[in-house]
Every structure is written in structure tokens, then in C-alpha cells.
Length: 303
Image: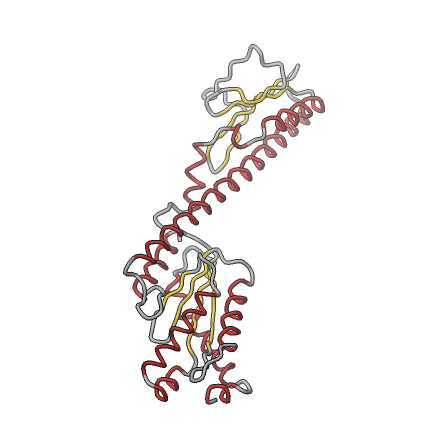
């Protein structure tokens, strides 16, 4: 889904160098926090950025010039990089209890900065994914990447999209296999025209029940594959149920669409979407066995 984007893991690792304490902390709240810490502990605090520019001071540092290279104080590190330095001052040397208190302050500031940073980068990443997906959908709509009969992606371009998702390290991803039940029965009984219409009807249902970000491809005569990037809990199951309900509710003089669905999840960035397709097909065949042996199925098909 992240068409050409750097993976989120690499982005989080690299982009911290672009952030300052002012971006990672609410400076007003941080000033109040360090002032309260000063009153409780008797320790004065000075927070500077990675270059030594002051961000927050509780006093006692008016004549102090920080040397972040040779005397860096306590380093605040996020994603392996120093984003700030915390200096402390007290009348005499720090007691053991005060040292423990400073360690706790450093830990709290580190956790806060890291949480803020990861949330900001993840949010920006998702926004860029959505924008790129919209652009890609437009290109698909106006390009030669669709299956001529159904308007879904052709098998080649579907696999390309799957590979892009793999390279983007997006997880979790639902991998769904959908297969038309007894398509051959319709083909034998009514010929190519009606069996093609059945395929188109099912494709339209798959598209109508899908959200914009779903990736749908016709990957065989009566086989469809669907990818749901960043799938939510229960979303894949709900989608399959809605597709099957819409098929069962379809009214027609000749065709009675029915679809078997199976799905699995890519939860590890090391996994390949296309390698998981066979697992989704296995689940689909289990579902097909249940459907075709359910009461009333054969009667509806032959009606």
C-alpha cells in the first residue's frame, strides 16, 4: 500500500533527527513538571536541545553555558538518537536519593518523548499511505490494469500491488480468497454468456461491499483475491459475511450466485502476501465444503 514509501520501521529510526524538544514536548506542561520536580527535590533543571539551545529552565542556570559535546549531562534518547540534554544543579553534590530522582525524571521524559514521536510519525505515515492509495486507485481506474470482464485488478497487477505492500512493511494485512461455487454448473447449463455474467455479478458484490482501500483482483477464471491492509479486528470476517449474504439475496431467473471465502492474516513483515494466498485458499475450500453441504444449497442452485 505504501507505494514507494520508506517502511514505517525505517522512518521511525531515521526521522527522529528532524525533531526538537519543542515538537516532542508540551513546553508549558514540561516547565510546570520540572518546576514541581525542583520544589520536591531541591534540584534545579535545565533542558536543552541536541545543539545546546535552552528549551526549559527552572532557574539557577543563568550563568551556565552547556557543552553538549564534552559535558552532555543526562541524555534524553529516542530511537537511538539524543534529542535533548538535561542538566541538574544543587547546592552541594547530589545525594543518592537525588540521583535516583534524576534518573526517574530522565526516564519519564524519555518515555514521553518516544510515545509522542511514534504517534506523530505513525499518523503522518498513515496519511501518506492514504494519499498514495487514492492516487494509485485513480491510475488503476484510468489505466490498463483491470480485468476486462469484472473491472477488478488483473492477476499480474494484483501481484504487483501485493509486492508493494510487502515492501512497505505494512501489517496486519488480511489475505482473502473468494471462489464462486458451482460456476461450472452454470457454464455447462447456460454457456459462456451466463457464466461470464455470474462472474461479473460476484465481482460487483465484492467491490460494493469493500472499502476504498481494499485491493481486489481476479486471479483465475472464477477466483478472486482481496487484500485489506491495516485490517481491524473482525473486519475480514465481516466483509466475507456481507459478500456471502449479498450473493444469497441476489434474485435472478437463471443464476444463483454463491461464494466460498477463506482468509488468513499477514502479521509479520517478513511474510509474503502471495505466499499466504495458498493458506487463504485452503480456508476457502473448507468453507466451500460447508456451504455446498448446507440444507437448501442444491435446491437454490437448481431452481
